[in-house]
Image 1: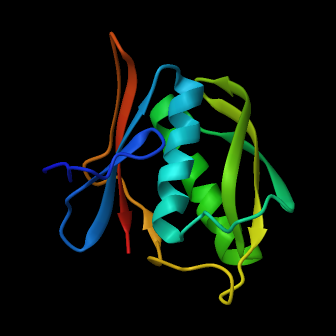
Image 2: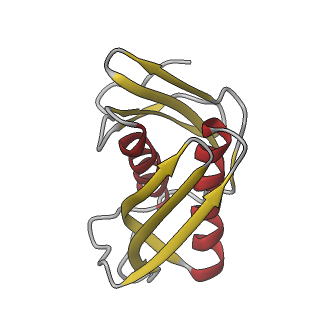
Length: 146
């Protein structure tokens, strides 16, 4: 899988993937990685430049491992977007343990007159997923079904 040059933005990089969207996420800390993964997800759903921070949703997510926690966090964000139609732009990770996350996501109600939609992300997948810790921090690869 190749990385697309020039697509690095806000702690993630878009990667080539047939028929889906893939991102490679970076963070000096695990909290930063979780935040950057959320930004990478929503930055591919819509252009976030016009998104105001009018709405906020609190998330309390638990999973058996930090890998599952990252995927569950992204799934919860997408579920909230699908049901509440809030485009999230800002993410505050308040508590992060290997199996528990408490965070607040802020954004704006989707308005097709104001917001430019890029892709409909249907799901977070396990396909080619990875989460690794190295000398420069954390990296993850996530593939989204579109």
